[in-house]
Image (cartoon, rainbow, N blue to C red; front, side, top):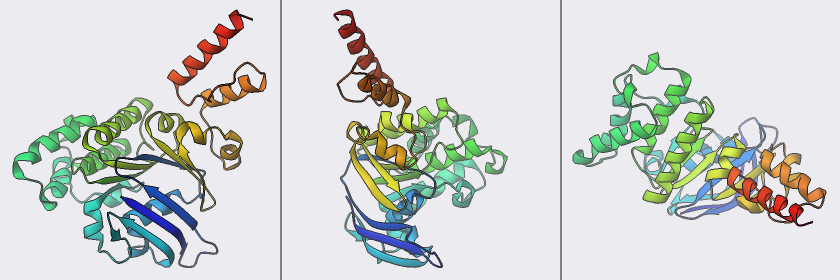
Length: 284
């Protein structure tokens, strides 16, 4: 599906590489979360995946990125956009219409979605994003969080093979953030769409994604299943990543010799851990 080999990139005029020796294979149907501190190279990696780099941002590009066989350097952006839909941090910069409905229709009509499917996809995407009531609103009248939901709905309505999202819940409240991730999970599981998401809300990310990639100073320092990556909390903390509190709790219990299992990364795992700890303590 996506193959990244020996990827390196330095922005024009940059003093150092924004990315160095990145190697990732992302299979069809994967749900990959990318975390790292500010300046770690997360957004640059997203731009390399969807072809924005090097088509829009000039610089020194090394290695290779392919999506479904398409080389992102040699292929036109229009072809790449059909393979990977993107939601950027700069929401205003990616809006093309003045009304919410037209924003979704623009992509659906231009991508050749059958006419009989358009209304269903439009309504479904708006409902899933929780913005059905905004269908006929002027985009200029919306809040930042509402615009973010419109951008997500516009891309998810297209159901491209890959969806790349750069901090999609940055301006959303916890409830709205969870709803967006539940929708992404549905797209991933029911429609087989490959999801790649950069997100700072580590607890939320760990609950939904299948794999985690940790970046630091332009390099990929950890990659694997969520539980596997969280087994090295000292590596994440050194990279400036705030690990889930339940993981920290598990570490503290391990240090005191009260727990020896896998570190939890969400509330159900934490509940199971505490039941085990309390059960063993009761038999002590």
